[in-house]
Image (cartoon, rainbow, N blue to C red; front, side, top):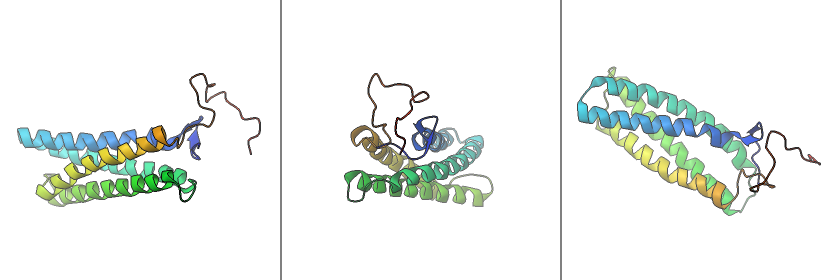
Length: 163
């Protein structure tokens, strides 16, 4: 089942998710570096990186929702997609809480709750990422119907009956 939101023949959602996933994971790495070194610059970097990851996650979610809405009701793909989407919404909420707690301190220093939210968020993102992989790799969501190892380029591929 092909994606409904495409640019140059490729689904938008899988392209966008690498940014929030990378940024939010990097924010947690900055937190770990802060805990090891006690250097305040890492807290500032974590706060700004987290903000960019949250914004990117919201944008990616819009395109994921567009693709999920066309999945047939009652299918495993629809159920897995719902878990994937809800799980990622929880990931974003955890990081939003972490960011707000840091921001409210004025110096970006994370307290225990902010750190726990970030660590839990990145762990949950691993699980929801696996669900996203299950959608694409196992269930064929966002995969072109004529995909194969010798398929034509998505830039030159034209359908005979684009109905």
